[in-house]
Image (tube, rainbow, N blue to C red; front, side, top):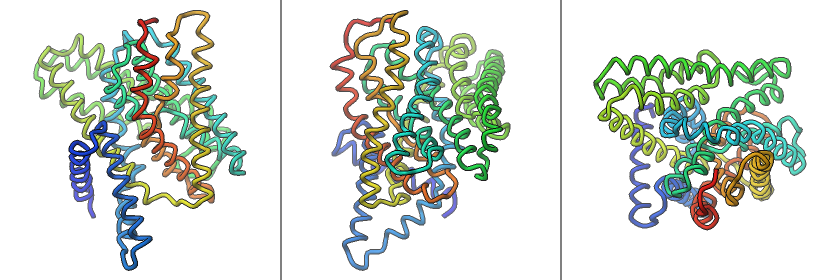
Length: 415
């Protein structure tokens, strides 16, 4: 199948599964599509296993292989999703929470990577550097999943800003940490660095280079939009910034996710306030909300059908279940340490730690990073454990975090 046929099939399936969810399950749209697609995938696998002569499994696996989930997300959809998410986070709100966000997106990701990686190595006997790669890809929260849940939860503004800001930035930081660790663990892997000697250079090149590129491109786009009063052209400029900027970042070997976040924050705040008319703001918001919803639907559909790319056996399932607990513990430490470190200097509401721990959802980015690993004897286990953590996170945590937030996060708003 060619690209247009695959895209058409995915959109049709996302629409059909979304309709099934709306009519029967009534779950949040993205989670409902994931549940329906996962159920359909497991049904095909079950029929293939139990019904003699039913050989659809191999055909579907071949189709899933053609989709190239990792490339589709990391080099295409991710830039639009991150830009859309950052567009609706105000820098004025983020400035008030920057210390918490910065610590969780840096120290928090580092602590979680070490804890999860060390525990995973102990569980599986995997070499520690390869296990740390698993820790790096599973530690960042997925802004796509997190921001989707935030729309349903109606949290206090300060808490929503902490969660949204941290998920946007720790995704980019986690991706850079992942690249560095893959360069050390797989020194001959493609495009992942050159071992320990290049790790520091790669980190600063990716992180700082991505931020600088996003700010520069966002500022240039803002200056151009100030001279234009045509909502259709200005929407097109924001789309060009998200698409073109992301691909330019990939070409320059700087962090494309961080570029997309920085550009989106600048356009969503400074650009919206000083570079757009009221009519343009309405169209830009509506356009990017629609893009976000459509890509979310397709992404969660892809996560559901990626079960065909994963190999499971009894030992793998046991490891996956243990990895869920390990990932939650790593997340708890990643949240608690920054909050406790800042508590002498500011006040936090009691619900911050449990809500941000349980609301730190994993998503398609973790699966895509696992799929992008160089082939090795450990890759199937890493992929299976990652997939189980992601499914648990989106379905179980995603469906219960609103209830938790409503129970412990409704006290009077504190700073």
